[in-house]
Image (cartoon, rainbow, N blue to C red; front, top):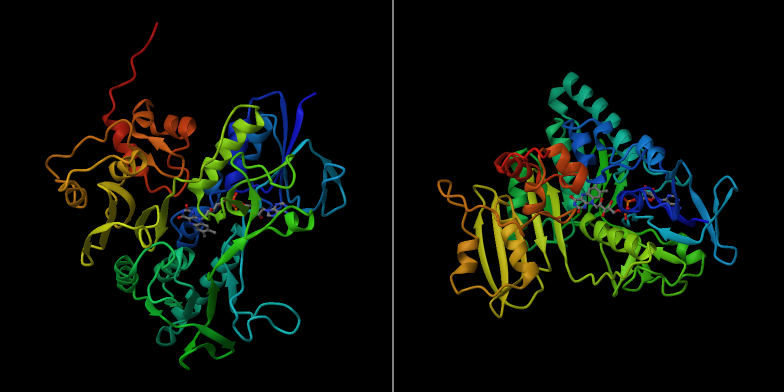
Length: 473
Ligand SMILES: Cc1cc2nc3c(=O)[nH]c(=O)nc-3n(C[C@H](O)[C@H](O)[C@H](O)COP(=O)(O)OP(=O)(O)OC[C@H]3O[C@@H](n4cnc5c(N)ncnc54)[C@H](O)[C@@H]3O)c2cc1C
């Protein structure tokens, strides 16, 4: 009898796991997803809000794809409890689903900042306040923004104002989308610069400048402390009038289910190098909800790497996740961002080039002649090469770090070596892309471009440049 694998959550990690397990008839896979839609690309929600993508275009794998691959995808199926003794999960309607192995891929949940007046006496949020994590949140915010834009068209002098609380990744994406929609948008961030968890003040200034170009005001070093019908009050006493407030200030791994089931949880569900719970070897965790070597992640690249490793573990192969590799591609404001390692805290010599006018910032941290961390904002033309040098720990000559930070000469582009990684989200190299005849084939075979989409241009160029596939037979 096939081994029953039950996956809780139908997000970006779960769909990747399903892709890797599809076609293995030794396994009977069930995906229990509480959202009502087929798994979609969360990273592109702000593109839906901005109006550049239709919501349908975000679907990663359709219900038909799951059915065709023999995977039982249940939408709107919220798991309420895990009964480890009976090896079954209990759905919100009381149905029990038995497992041989359980995979928690529950993602993360937004945290509410301590703002007085945010939650009303009846437990609901203040009516102007929105969260932004799911397609449902996105649709609600989209409707609210549309009616404010209409109001603004009727009364252009008092243009409606939107405030985004949090200048992290989500905050920047939402602020850009609302500003492009025509709302007067302001960002409030408690740290002294934007995207403070990932990059330093220099990169933060380049991002703030990019937002200001859209007319968005950025308040850093300021915390929202109270919300009233007049607006949002900051800790410096200033009140920002607001018609719409979006909370993007932080999230944490979704661990309530694991905690109630008695699994070891610190910040996330604690797993070992095989992504197996340290409490129960029949339970695994991947993605935003997992904690490996005291670290939780929060972006798609490690979630997909973990999904691939776990698929091998579930198929009985030797596989192990070391979590050493930390490469994130982010869509922030209109600028792409790449972060390798921890560029603010890594020890080493810093080589940095900033061009706020062109909207670009590049920082390499070099230790013992090797790149140990990097942050790139704006111009990501060298990211493939830099990632390859970082991954391999290649020893650089004294001038090389500086040269790597210069923009590519337009007249003499250096071809990307086959081993250079072009899609950080799906871990796809230039050689793998070149082996595909079309972009569509590349998407199907490698899943490149289906994460943050930042590599789409490079993939298109590589496929165009590659020699035409030779007909055989
Ligand atoms: C707006 C936005 C922009 C982002 N931008 C980037 C970016 O530019 N680059 C990047 O690398 N990352 C980005 N991220 C982060 C990235 O989306 C996450 O790291 C990734 O989705 C993690 O995958 P996951 O499967 O662990 O979690 P998720 O994709 O969040 O999926 C978890 C799913 O589990 C469901 N679930 C939870 N509990 C239960 C339950 N009890 N029963 C059933 N289902 C349940 C949830 O509803 C959800 O659908 C962004 C995230 C957001 C929200």
